[in-house]
Structure formats: structure tokens, C-alpha cells
Image 1 (cartoon, rainbow, N blue to C red):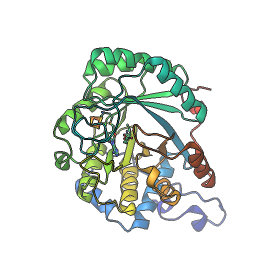
Image 2 (cartoon, rainbow, N blue to C red):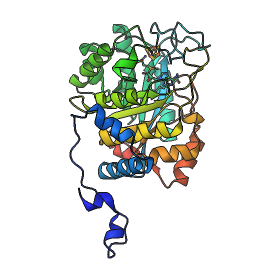
Image 3 (cartoon, rainbow, N blue to C red):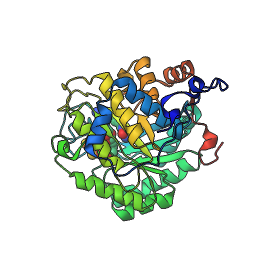
Image 4 (cartoon, rainbow, N blue to C red):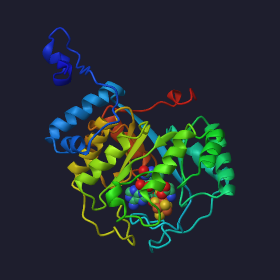
Length: 347
Ligand code: SAM
Ligand code: DTB
Ligand code: SF4
């Protein structure tokens, strides 16, 4: 192990006052065991944060945050029974039903997101899987949003290979499809589709040449072992996801998980840190749940290796910190948003 991994250079070499950890890290691995993942989770907190921060600095600009804005392009009345979700038709959550948005309206919202400083626009739909005519309309959204110089992301449920290919041809950059939790715990949260269905969609997305955005939710009553196993599954995919959203459950009244226990904030941060260590090149996104988090907890998440957020007042149906609060937080931390120029070379 390099001494640089253990001590900042400023402590081992007095001639170099610059704090530079310059750790030597091996290439990303795809052979993680559950025991190794659990060993990371159970390290003393400071040791885990140090490992995560070291890995983060080896692969990423340490003070840059990628910002995605979400838009629900089709809301509510979803036939699936995901126990966390306010959009399932089975739960009375007060979420209104809205048909697929017209393209022009989506483009207007994307333009506003770009003006506010987002570099990626993520279109979410409450589908089990999209129909042919939906894909045609969404492909047009993708073409027009991408023409604005934004990266495009969509999350539409399960996809057939041909649908993934059509979205790729339209210029889609990322597809979000979360495994949410371990295969073992999954059955307690969702009964209307299998873990294998999720993995099959991830394969279709990858084979179409799309970037994969895949992560999970902390706070559904899962154990540390389930969190560790989810990260093993993600890290052992043939190719790591480019983006890993770590959501804290938003406990929406009317959903079966509304009354669940609160997550220990340190356990949430541990999940981010272990994701950073095991999937080192990915953008690890501090995702849902930020509206309930203090600035200090979010700073800890960045320290643990999160380098991406959802940006804008709304997630899909629930709230998110407003733009002014996020701007102020990044400013106070001396962090900056990923620049638009870094994305497609756009203005
Ligand atoms: N219907 C599609 C699907 O499930 O793949 C796309 C939209 S769905 C809302 C996208 C993701 O949002 C889910 O996989 C889940 O991880 C996350 N999500 C939904 N409700 C949430 C909640 N209450 N708290 C945290 N994350 C949530
Ligand atoms: C993801 O991992 N989280 C986002 C996005 N991918 C689609 C969604 C969070 C949804 C939170 C509940 C809501 O606003 O409806
Ligand atoms: Fe439907 Fe997606 Fe919500 Fe599940 S998470 S109920 S599939 S919108």
C-alpha cells in the first residue's frame, strides 16, 4: 500500500506544503464479496470516510458536483406496487394523475433547468414499461432536450432491447433503473416484478450503448447486509454503472412505508462511502431525501464521496431543496457545479 494512501504528502514531505493525497488505487474491481462489503460498512466511521475520500480524489475532481434536474413527464396511476412509491395506483397518496406531457412543455422545463445551472435533464415516467407510442414521443423529447446542450436521462420502467436502442438512436445519454435493494429484501418491497426483470432491463440498456444509472434506497427497513449486498450486485455487474443514485426514503403518507423507522444519518453516509469505494469511477448521487437533511449532513455526504445531486425544487412528486439553498451550500463549501462546457462541449 502506498504511503500516500495513509498520509497526506504535506505530512510526509515537508518540501511539499500542498495537501495532496495522491493515492495509488487499483483499477475498479468486479469480484467483490459480501464479506468485503460488510467489512467496509463496519469500519470505524472516520476510517471509512478516509478511504472513501481517498478513492474519490483518485478518480474525480474533489470539489465538483454534477447537477441533474428531474421532471415527471407522466405522473401517477402506476400499476406496480413498490411500497415506497407515491405514484402506485394501489396507494392513496393524493398524487394526481397526469398523462404524458407534450414535447414542447418538456422542452420549456429543460430550458429553465439549463438556465438554473443543471447539466443533465432526467425525464421520469410512472410506467411499469412504456408502450410503443410513448417511446416515440419520448424519443422526440430526448432529441429536443439534447439539442439544448443538456445531457439526457430517462427512467421509464422496464425496457425491451429494441426500446433501449430507439432511445439511444434519439440521443439518450443515461437510463435510470434502480435495483433499490438486495435481491433477498426486494420481495418485501415489490411483488409485481422480479429482481431478474430489473437486471434484464439493465442488460438491455447497457447493450444499447447507453450509460447506466442504477442505485437504491436506504430506509425501507432493510438491514446493513441488504445495503452491502445491493452494492456488491452493482459493483459486480460486467460494467459499473456510470451513475449510482443513493436515495433516502421519502416517507410519503399513504404508502406502506410511511411509518417506517428513521434512518441513522451515519448509516446513510456509510452507504454513500461504501458505494464510492466499491464503484470508484461512478458519479455517486446524493438523491432523494435531501429536503430533510441539514447542510452539515449533506457536507458529510460530499466528504464521503457523493459528487452529484438532483437540483431543482421538485424530485418527481415530492420536494427538494430550492436552487438558492443549494447554490448557497456549494458556495459555503467552496464547491462548484460541473460546468456546462464539460457536457457535450455545449455552451
Ligand atoms: N417507474 C419507473 C421505475 O420504477 O423504474 C421510473 C420512476 S421511479 C419513481 C424511479 C425511482 O425513484 C425508483 O426506482 C426509486 O428508487 C425512487 N423512488 C421512488 N419513490 C421514492 C421515495 N418515496 N423515496 C425515495 N426514492 C424513491
Ligand atoms: C432516483 O434514484 N431517484 C429519483 C430518480 N432516480 C428518478 C426519484 C426520486 C423520487 C422520490 C419520490 C418522488 O418525488 O416521487
Ligand atoms: Fe411505478 Fe416506478 Fe413508482 Fe414503482 S417506483 S410504483 S414502477 S413509478
